[in-house]
Image 1 (tube, rainbow, N blue to C red):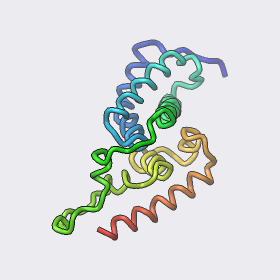
Image 2: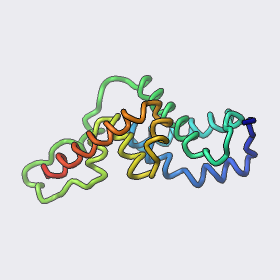
Image 3: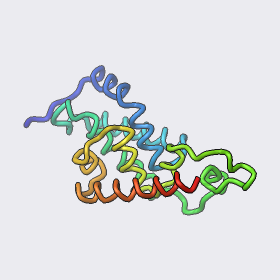
Image 4: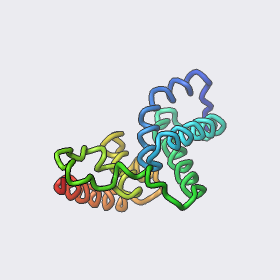
Length: 162
């Protein structure tokens, strides 16, 4: 199949249609809004520059999500290894007096490790198929299924604890 170059208007329209998906995906990997926004912006710039590599315009969503996930993992590799406690306070156990507050499903998803969180987010929140998740994350379909199963089990455990 020949490469096809998206024009600026079509590219922008596709980005706007997928902006929420992109942000949620980046947030699932990077945790922080600012980092997610930066990764999305870098992915959009990289996608626009490389838009000639998109062979099928109907595959825009998985194509740009693959670019985004790569940018997120690149960001993770560059990130310093220390963790500010203020960044994770939402994931620390609540004091005994606040037990009435229930852990929301999204908070539980965000508490998963990054491998499980990315797969669960792409499958349940972004409605990607196992095959599409496999392509986006660069892992086998069997690995996607395994991570989904482990993610579900961990979510049940986290929600049951609350």
